[in-house]
Image (cartoon, rainbow, N blue to C red; front, side, top):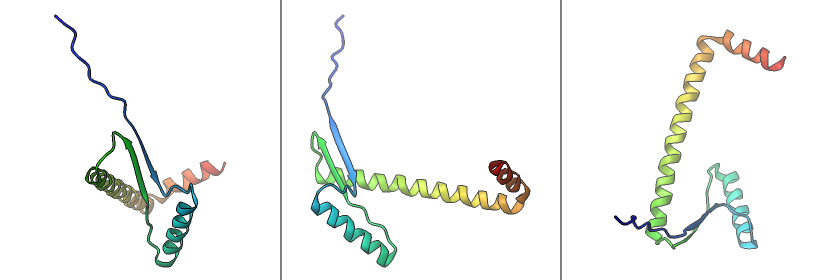
Length: 104
């Protein structure tokens, strides 16, 4: 019986968000920062480099998937914070004790 063939290919990838290397990127970040101060909304600049190269559609799917994961993480944080707030209101003594222990 022969050994199974294992297929491997070396891959690499770099995903950078609002990377500030280079004059063009620094100017872009400054403009995004200014826009954030004006309207209070955040913006991101993605750059995806990979070997083997991904098509624009594949890159778009990766970004879409990452925003779905981000949305799920924000929803989980909101639920945890709502629970924490309810506990703070229902049992304020527990939080007072924890605050006192941290300051000691």
